[in-house]
View 1 (tube, rainbow, N blue to C red):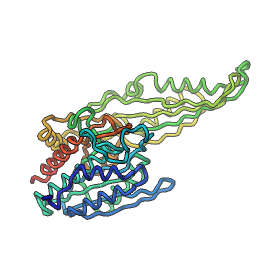
View 2: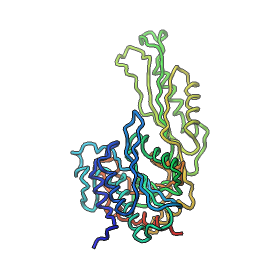
View 3: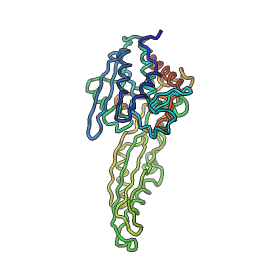
View 4: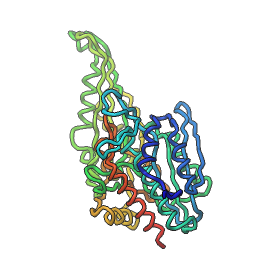
Length: 391
């Protein structure tokens, strides 16, 4: 006989995948989570935030228990578009299980992990009861894959205004590159986007003295930014926990269709992923100095989407790694690679670690998560909760 306070992680993951919650649309995903959480005793609050011109976003904060310590699980229900649905072997929003794999957009990133944590929380509460001593919460946004303006950052601000402190946070991003439990993320590099516009004077290619070629200036400027590895150019040196920083030029645009006209404008865009030897402000200063030294009239626009951050190896990272090792038989390596995540916002409020499913198929056609991985991830999350609230 099924116990009423048990949650089947596979059934919940399927229900979430069947909600086509492509950012910023929720499509019922938060409703499905809220129903499951309220069934096991969580108090749920829906928080909708607005900041034009960005889309309004619905978020969910659920908690059970009061006081400290406070353990928070953070994640997102929104997903990237499926692409060409006809290229999938199954319905991208069907939640089909085929040959031991759960298919669908969000199966790995990260609806499978959301379902695993809710199931783990249900198991924990069944054993310990609501008076386990402390607070257990979930911070779930629908704005992680998009602008990330009206999501996690605003929920954290709201919690801070409410006087709610978090002692530790686990983010369920898919961190495992090859096998479940091979990596936990203890930090991420920062991200800085740049848009460079260079100005010259238009003219005939046969009379270069009467013109000023914007492309030539742009080439020199980009060469100055990429002449050597970024950490060497800036004198930052090596990082203990992070891979080297890198600047990648992502586009160069002139828009000149005439082969006999010297262009008066040229544009380029670039992205910098930077380690803990840098800050966005410091890189901004370096970029402005370097471009000014290269010469040429120009404008530079910059936008940082996150600073680098690190949860140094210590009690919390050891707790998560130890629980994973005990359940899976392998000890995760601590890593800081990959893109950004909402952990970049959480790190200002609490120690944060990321641990989730294998990321091999995320954002791809036929995204999937092995059924066994979802079940074992549930076991890991349950072990983390047991260890965190052991005393």
